[in-house]
Image (cartoon, rainbow, N blue to C red; front, top):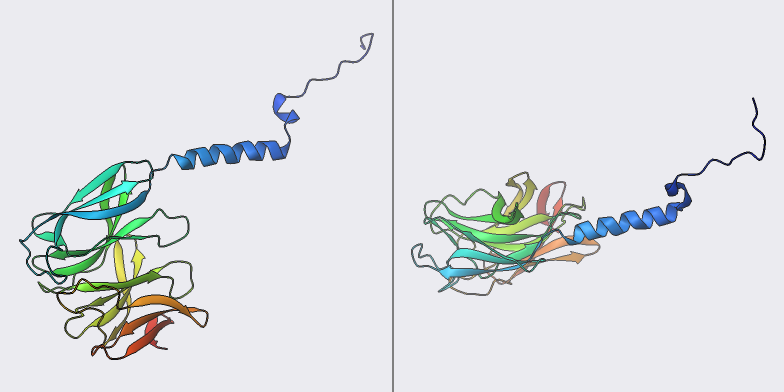
Amino acid sequence: MKSGGAAATPSKPAAAHQSPRRLLAAALLALSASAAGVETITGGQYAAPVEHYGHFALGRPHEYARLTVSTSNGQRHSLELPEDAVFEDLAPRLVTLAAGEPPELLAIVSQRDSGSRLALIGLRDDRLVISAQSPPIGTPMRWLNPVGVADLDGDGQAEIAAVTTPHRSGTLRIYRRKGKRLLEVAALAGVSNHVYGSSELAMSLALTIAGQMQLLVPDSTHLRLRIIALHDGQSGVA
């Protein structure tokens, strides 16, 4: 049965009056507001110099018990190492290994019984933790010096390059992160990027040559520079 009079027009839900562009803008605004509240590391420094390790590859006072960081929210956090370990380093390096990942700090940690290792330190649940690390050198009073952090094979994930034992038979080692481990993926002997007791760490670097990220590292005599590239997971002189 039809009712008399003009037919009523059904009312549309309120959301139907909003254009897709306006809805997208609102969603992006909400997302950016959420991201703005994420706390990330913006810098760090070592504190609490100690004497109990006593190697001093960089000279005094560059062995420290504590790392202090600042964050995007204006907060400060600290990480204290156990008694048998020190940060044997000048300053932590702010790094991001892949797009979309939060920045972390790359540090050199030296252990009384096993020497130095690389450590990535990140912010988890409002506290600092060692999120990934390389195997230690394995011998006390043996040190390593990072070369740089760069995407050496073009896969979008940065590798970490360092010279282990640069004061004696130095070896360039390239590490790739896998979970909580920094795994060695390539190595090349006969290099050195540090003089014992010096605070100069910039004898080597990563840079783009002929469209590929490569490493410049002195040989073991410090008389020649070697240009080193990563090819098919192996390092070699370019």
